[in-house]
Image (cartoon, rainbow, N blue to C red; front, side):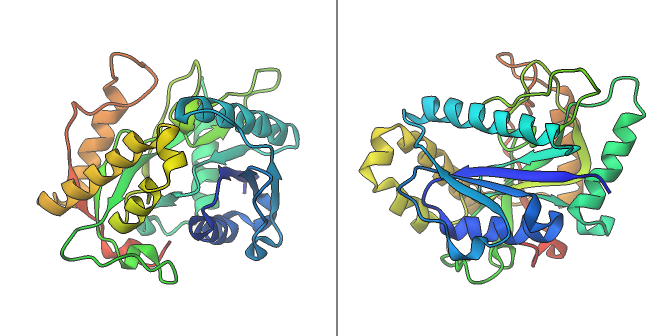
Length: 292
């Protein structure tokens, strides 16, 4: 089994942090988790025993400036972890979860270790792995407000297939002597490198899972003043889409989306996926139900 670390940075979001620590801790081992609280005014939660966690100086600026500062910090952390002997470093926002299809009957560590071994046999091994982006939404009128005490995927069944969340989430240690890869803002790309979407791997994004939660965060004037209003507005659009559009069959839709995103690029970024601006809604299979 390969050595795999997972890192994230957050500010005031203990609900998702609890889920993040629980999931990645079970999949990778709690001693392989590295969490950074954006601001020394935050306390370390009591459920974080056994992980590496610390509060750091607040990374100031608007949304764009903050994203650049945070990813620069985390890319530096990833470089240090590679120097410690890790083979892969997973980087996600605290509301994002890399999940192999349960039909594969492999946990995340075993799944990624197999992909790593296959990659190393290539003439040019991959520098990163991506899961297909699954942007979870709330189907209004059917799905109630979220309860974080229960599994999230037992309460949400609809999602948009998203190029935005098909991220280069897993960095791979380069061959000896080569410069370690670095993420672009938000883990959306790896600077100077292409991406590789792995079959049967998904990045579930839960930032759009509850309309009331989004509205509460939009009411925080300091977030809006720093440019988060537009960001939250995009999340409400996901909820509207999954509420109004008929879902497509999962297997056909994810196969089509993976193929599209592997080959199509936006004109402004050759190392990010595109999908002809298609808006595809799917119903998540029951086999994912209790995972997060």
